[in-house]
Image (cartoon, rainbow, N blue to C red; front, side, top):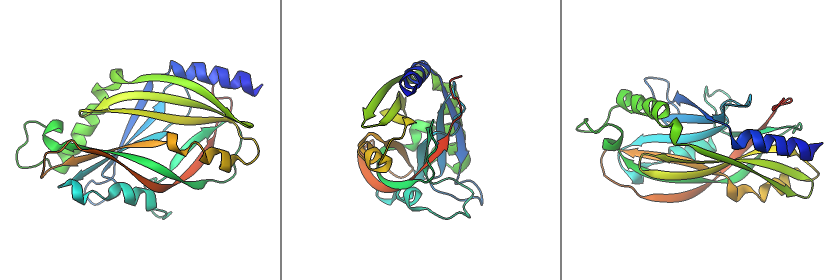
Length: 228
């Protein structure tokens, strides 16, 4: 049954469109890290706010620190989510922490708002992020594949998209079968998980790109009959 479920889920995800939800975190007095998060989810499944694109507004690249802070935040008093949440067709009672790659891409603020001079302000920054989500949906390309390791079966939703002059490729896991020693097996896939992390710079022009690895909390969300 699980093999059939995995094939059906793969078919559903491979042709799925994309939902994008913007949550400003660095606006007025409601501070958070990073300044904005765009949550990606498939439009064919009840799996909202599935995977983040992180966006920080900063002066210089050397000052960028919100992505590390995102990974380290644990407080339950925060009004914002600071962990990854993956969907599963089997119940997983507890999450764990994994080393996750943050794919950091520097962007000059003029790319978001070419008519601004003297540095982009917060309202213009958030407006530009919302505008990007409205105009770039058609640029997303999706596919899906199945991996099996022991009794752990996962469908990976694969996405390719451009953002502010950079190209991103990500894979989002949907767990179909857990199997024994799930945490140990899932950790073997940690190098597949990469979070797009955009650093919008006001005081320097840079398109530098680099990876940073931070231990990040992973939680799981149970989906009931997601493709029926």
